[in-house]
Image (tube, rainbow, N blue to C red; front, side, top):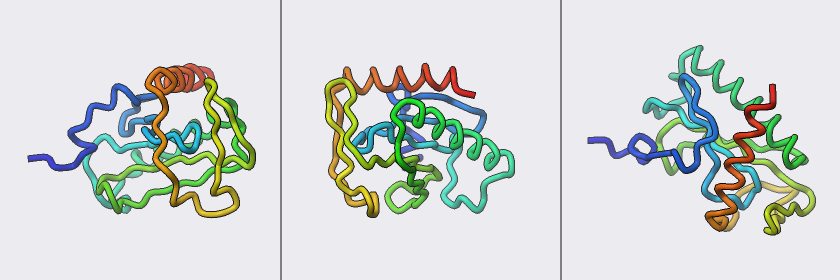
Length: 146
């Protein structure tokens, strides 16, 4: 019986790109505009056990994710988190950080933690239409960015 929430989850709503070993998804919590997760497709709890091919693809996808988000929203920097404290399944959070407010689809995004740790932060679920619009726009940029 699989108890891992990532192993039994359908990511079609959040999916930006699916590679050989990883899925790139738009994070449900968009407190940080454009926040993504890169999730290993097989169940693994310790990133030290990743294969060389998985590591290479992870690096390539992370670089592309950053390029896409830079082009879309011009973040001032990025935080990367691979903790495994809550969900014990290898995944990487790509967290764009902003020194000034961003507006997307009429919604205001303010990084109140700017200059400090990205955590803690409040839960922010975008309206479903805005979330889908953002996901679709990220997919368009994904297909364009080299």
